[in-house]
Figure (cartoon, rainbow, N blue to C red):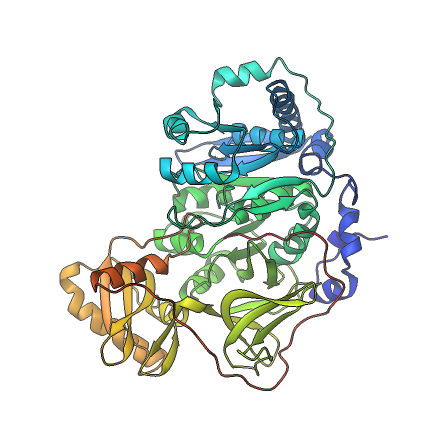
Length: 552
């Protein structure tokens, strides 16, 4: 019988998918399953490279499945010798490297719970997460040791060359005994240190559900050489970028260190990667660096997540790689629910669309009354989970062909003089200006209109040219979008605030503007007009068991 990985088309995805068939991709079953075994140990005899870590400073670190299986087993034995029990939490704060993957899979192999932490967290960011998850141990490097120890509670183990030598005295095989329902990973979403998001708790069987997003969101199939530059401290980099492709035995590319777009382009070309999933920001930075034309690529499938991609960047991707970049949309809590099915020749990628629902999921655009909105009407994006409609906290609309479009976060909507405007749509037009490298749009208080649009733009134009630049931006938006949606205020900035996952952090900009005006922030309530008519959704098989994951 064929596997789900044998099918590539959109039509086959609708006809062949069932939740039960996902389990056929793994050694484990509903009773007993371990992520480390599925991603590492069962591929150890393949002779293939598991990971190629492209390093910011040049060069790369190549790690085979066999090496990773032995290294992670040794670390699992070491953890057991230290008294780390199954179910204990172990925080890991390391850049992608042999040390990181040894620690991550060693912890999971032991039956403990891995808690990846972003390496750019300072003492406060570390302390808040440590206080929340109460790890029995924190593994980090010498550079972060002081900040880690400042966090207080857990013992700290520096993964040094000496520690790596210590691990060599332990056995190279470890028998995992985890249940499929045991917790394996705590994942923090990319919030601020002042507003700690709750950790999303993932069991081992989350890996099974993850394959829905892997097969239809990133389009991975056996034989792909797959690259994801997102940090494995976040959902996209860990689950879509690491665990899913390794589970299928793929060679996976990762990026370590301060992001440099040309270094990424070099790595893609040199190692002949055929499939890449990245944040929209990564593609935009590749465009802005101006070096893509210097390299030759082997890419066959491209996807993005995190935020909508602007039209100019999508055009750059098409011209540079000869491919459409496919959207993958979801949240860390809900999972991937919309995709553009990379690699499916029978799925036309529609410009600006999030795609259609993945198999096994129903998505609707709903008004405040809970009824589906008619095509073209903006409402709340809702997902059916266990018989209940769950909000994504995003706005969207659906077209007559069943494609979903993003309308921005509910709190990113700007209401000015009664007009409801999308920050995402305005940003897309602003980025059409050749001197606009990055852009973020928010609503700022206005005595007459309630709110007006303000655009923050990273630009090559000097600040002294702000009046002319403002006029050009305003005229562009009036011409391309509408006469009333133009930014009445424009600021040239050196950089935009971003979440650690690389998304533009509009909330920070709003808070700064309100603070400057001496106003306390209050939530904006958006009430899209209800309309009759059923939105197109998808096939509706039984819900998939376990948790599905995306980057956030």
